[in-house]
Image (cartoon, rainbow, N blue to C red; front, side, top):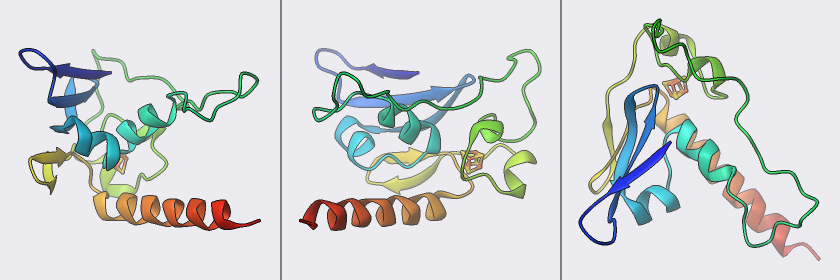
Length: 129
Ligand code: SF4
């Protein structure tokens, strides 16, 4: 769920998963440099300008956790492509990832590095004849 609030036009967005804010920051920053794997998955499921009508939208595999029996670790862990052992043990707290932009994930550096590699490969592919 992406939830935004502000009097008038929203300037900030909080991304929530299983009752936790997993990413929070200025809308432009969160949309341009999403840091949490759930936010990245949500944004990846939005139809882009270049999507054709016969193209399937991306989706996040799996289901949200049982809210009565939340896991002790990161609640997104069963669905996360970036999960590592610590993810199942303890739920991460929000950390600064940019000016006024925070995200809760044990693997923020790995996620960021992976996103940069994907962007670079898209640029390379778009430059091919
Ligand atoms: S803490 Fe681990 S499981 Fe949770 S979002 Fe980050 S990488 Fe994925």
